[in-house]
Structures are given as C-alpha cells and as structure tokens.
Image 1 (cartoon, rainbow, N blue to C red):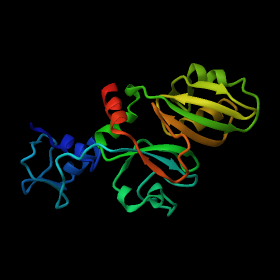
Image 2: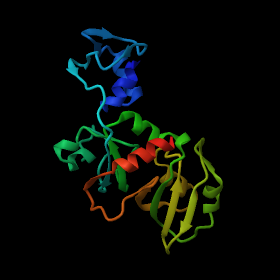
Image 3: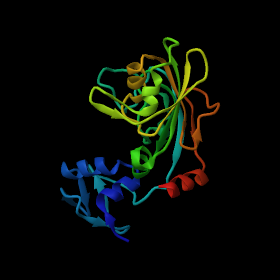
Image 4: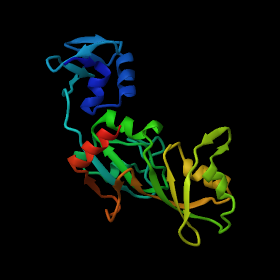
Length: 232
C-alpha cells in the first residue's frame, strides 16, 4: 500500500511528520535516487527512501519508553549553551528515540520517548485530551487564587484551559492538565500567587512513573502501546 512520503518518514521513526516535510522542502530526501522537494509523493515497501544519502526502513516496530528525567537537564538533542541534555543520560542504544513533548530544565519525572514520530505527535495533540499529572511544591500557603486556574485563565494574552488542582500538603499540589503548553504549570501557578519551587511529573495518560529510579529508562509493553493507539 502506498503512503505519503512524510508519513513514511514519520512511521520509520526518523522524524515527526512536520519535521519530515521540512526535510523534504530542504531537498534532503530522495526516492529511488531522485531528490524531491514536495510532500505530494507516494511510496511503498518497494521504494528506496534516503535522507542525506542514508537509507531509512519502511517501518520500525513501535517502541515506547518511560524515562525518569533528572533535574537540570534539557529536553533536546543539543543545547546551544552547553547544558546537559536528556541524551547525555542515556546509553547509545536509546539515543535515536524522540521525546514526547518536553519537560523544562528544572522539572523532573516522567518523560515518554519513542521511535515512532507519528505516535509522538498524537500523544502531544490537545485534541487527544491526555491527562498529565504533576506534583508541584510551591512557595506560600495561600491557595485562594487557585480557583482562577481551576476555571481557566489567560496570562500575557495566552489562554490556559482549566486545571484540576488538589491540595496534598502544606506546600504541595497535585496538578492535572491536558493541554501541555510550554511551561504551563509554572506560568499559571505564578499568576495565581503560588510560584513553583519544584515540579515533578508522575503520570502521562495511563502510564505512571512509579518507582523508576532517576535517570533510568524502561520499555512500555506492546499491550499498552496498542491500547494507546486505539484511543486516538
């Protein structure tokens, strides 16, 4: 069966579909030896697809992992300021994996990683409505402003969806979100008078970090992967 070239690349795990389209537009992709510059091309298992002269496989089996991200690491492949990245914590065999969304430099906890670019994209779409749960340690004990976050709030012109917020201790909150906008929890809690001191993600959908040690990575079962794919 033929598929669009961008989907072929995303399914191979090399890049997300959007990144694949950028690779195509920049003339880095070829089909059967001919360079293309448009995503309106179709390929099947008999075609040879190359990126920068390197052949890519038609489809890799989907793999999904949970990684316990340490503090003071960047969720990126390379950091222009030379800071430590998540890939510095991983063995060579995992360095081809893509991260699903991002956790900021100071945030710790559950980060999903996969070889399937299309799965990564779907897991981060707001329309997928996947709950991410965080434990936030905040400065101050006056939580009266948090109802604004529970109703939904606009900060600096950006609208944030309502959050589920539970008080679980003197300075601790359990936060559940589904949007996953950049620095969402920190921005919203600061605007509500509860600036975050520590932030730790404990679950992403049905996947829970549990007791996985800091800096370690663990494969997710195929059964769980199949259930996730069926949910989209």
